[in-house]
Image 1 (cartoon, rainbow, N blue to C red):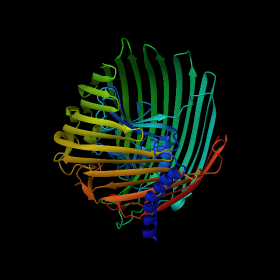
Image 2 (image 1 turned 90 degrees about the horizontal axis):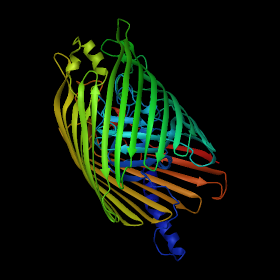
Image 3 (image 1 turned 180 degrees about the horizontal axis):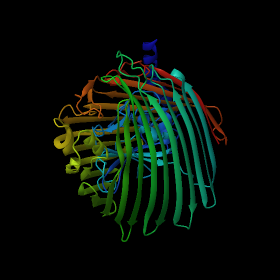
Image 4 (image 1 turned 30 degrees about the vertical axis):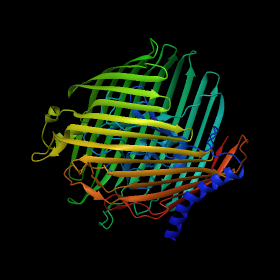
Length: 639
């Protein structure tokens, strides 16, 4: 049965596209792309290059739907250059590495996060241990996801060796829309959601609610996600807009433990809740556009664990309290030119306690502060042949770690269907509040203040070519040189700015649209890392996807991925030698049937989705086998 399902999935990948070409031939029409977009791009919407020579990969809610992704790691798991780790089908066990995203070898270290995660441009992360928590970043609120695969020292600053920015849903055209969906699958996995938005005159609003749960593919691999999101917007004048968003998540996930290991007397569990508020005043004028954003993030994590050496059940309780202000103005004062003036103030941190039967160790409320003005300039030169030079600088002032300067320069060449970009960026990554607690435990007092920020030099050269209306490709070469990396050392226990690392490689993507019914995507990343045991830096990753519409009412999405063997580590235990997991390939698919005619105001769909069609045995982490083949079926209604 396993082999049959695998070969059936592979056959569908090749047979159905051929059927689509046969459909075109039977009509007597030439095989050329048509302007009408029937299918959404698989895997990614595409790659874009900003006027500051940063390449950004775009994923929309359409790609998330095509992948039947339940959370952010599964939504990004096929993006070239991105790798993930996880324990469970639903819920990220975020206390260690049971739910994380890594970009070209970045994101696997602490005590400072290397990848910044944002919602509508504001940082969202666990403020004490300074790392992203995937369960706080619901994909049900997503309109678009922007993935930055290189350092962003000017516009994002600290913790931005890579970045993932979620842009939330908003109703921008008059009228109303409602979407309802429910799915049920293997291991009692449930996925439900409701969203509704409207725009009346100057007012707009959007509401989202979702609930997901699963018993998991192993004992104690269960989890649950609850998400609620709301937006209210008002157009103050023709060019001015006010928006208030709020979000709340409540989640938990259990740790199934290493396969074959003795079960502890209590199941380790990671529980999170987070409330997020954002008030933004923005304008879009002929002479420029800008915003002022004020935000507040109040979160908590409750982590129940078992210490096998002491045979103790203990709890780690974290409460974080992040807030900030961001002001940015993009001025268009002369033809083709832009001047960006910006300022950010960010306060992050909170309190922590580790409660054991024999003792309790506490970190009282502790906060770090960053204040950063930034400036950037770009200029478009020429008409048919365009040159776009750019440069930017950020001056970051930290209360405890002194001042850091991040800067970048870029150059873009555009001619007809060809675009070439080159960029250099010098970024920095500050230690998180986590070091204060660790040095307290290690009896090192305030020696953590002697630590310096990590530094990174990022180089990137890429070319994008649109060969025809139905064929386009991107090729990007990248180099990252990191120094002053914070490494755990003992005795005595401490962190030191010692290590250097070097990653380099190339990434390629191709999108092929032979008919309006069919779109094919392929991408790959080749990555070399020094030292060779750098965690989460596989030498080769390959990904592909097909979106195919046939017989008027059917839509088939198929995606596949290959990931080479790689080193992995748990950043919570810095003394641990990096483990290693084998390479794997995965094949997944989703078939959707539209019940209603295209012209109907009410659209209803049935779908069935399958992951790991070949029932491949693989691991994201040693001793944590991932699920075999899983199936989910469901229905969606939109009006």
